[in-house]
Length: 209
Ligand code: GAR
Image 1 (tube, rainbow, N blue to C red):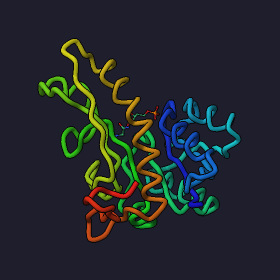
Image 2: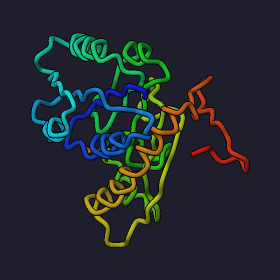
Image 3: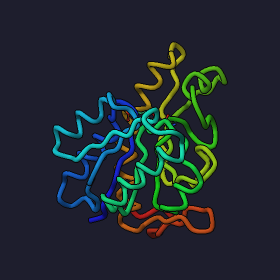
């Protein structure tokens, strides 16, 4: 089983979806630790109840971004993960950090990338008059929310949606898609190569599940 470290900043519902999937004996990955940049992230308590080791490294406790990332990298070195999952981790990782785990960091973003990268994605999708929205799991590269796409799912945008109601609808599909994407990656059925996602294909040209 592949060793997975999860980075969070908040409630950790995606981290929990990954942890629940990983609790099944046939899942190809296990969660070996959860690291947060917020001491009060709700996800830390949730991970703790599952017996997953948790670590908080708060940005303001470090002199700068480089020192903060060094502390997280040192934690990761102890956990020796094969894969890092960003799950609502609201900081941009430096190029040096990403290079240290080249092709092994994946992220979930609550929009149909390449549309609506960055913050306030739900409101921006509503303001653009989109009739569908969704989520994307992708490899992390230096550009924010720019890496090759592993999996996506769509939901309708309802005429009376607010950013909050749309976010809640997208979150339910995030919880399904992120474990599926992690499974695909952990089984070696998708990898990043030459800046693209390369899939092992089942007959019919669909990614093998
Ligand atoms: C999720 O919707 C995730 O896609 C989003 O933050 C939320 C975290 O919720 N991530 C981003 O916006 C990253 N740019 P969670 O803590 O309950 O998983």
